[in-house]
Image (cartoon, protein in one colour):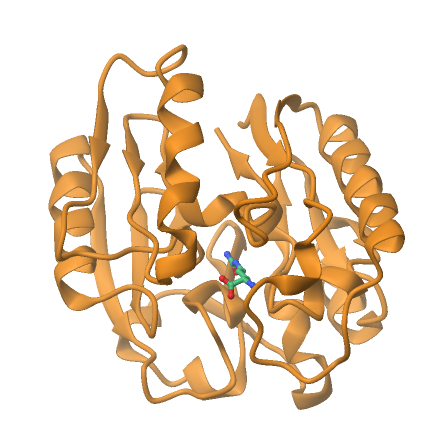
Amino acid sequence: MFTRAIVRQPSTNFASGLTSVDLGPPVFERALRQHQAYCEALEFCGLDLIRLPPADKYPDSTFVEDTAVLTARGAVVTRPGAKSRLGETEAIPPVLRRYYDELHSIREPGTVDGGDVCEAGEHFFIGVSRRTNEEGAKQLARLLDSFGYSSSLIDIRGLSNILHLKSGLAYVGGKHLLVIEALRGLKEFCGYDLICLNSAEEYAANCLSLNSRVLVAAGFNETKKELERLGYQTIALDISEFQKMDGGLSCLSLRF
Ligand code: CIR
């Protein structure tokens, strides 16, 4: 059960952030409206929001998920893999100290983006990606182990179509994992029930399970219908402007 989420409104220079997709520049006013609707959906799911001020110095800082890994038993401040994003973590410890007795952190030369970390109950999948290096992934695995969680590393460096592990994988509840085709055959997912996305809906893999609801990107109706068929209550949210900057639903908050 989540009770809180950290969010950060996009800064005015949000369009100068990093992106690898070719969907055109985001429209700032629309991004603000979409962010507001996202925040309202989190509140509807029972979360109290902690709002960090927008930071012009860091155009990607609205993707606050990448700055920490928060669990019920411990918190880890990450070390994002993109140089332009390293300073984003400075805003995190002052907030987390209110809720966690001890904060851990990823140390140089390790790098971890929170978007590469997929919690599935007592187990965590950690992506080794263009952002999260092996050293960072191993540091995180050791910290999770010290909290009493198991983890497995999944190397996605060979997949050019996803930035982070959670761009292609989501845990939605029970034994259900939503996966893109390229990840479905992995031995690490043995014992889970896989919901495989159709190729036109792969962006919808980054959905967000929050208490009794699943947030799904709007416009991906097959995925939404499949989740509903399996008994999940969904909320569709338009996040087109964040998609243009390589982001998805999970990236916009840190839930705990
Ligand atoms: C970046 O490239 O770092 C941002 N434009 C997008 C980060 C998305 N974050 C996430 O998936 N957790």
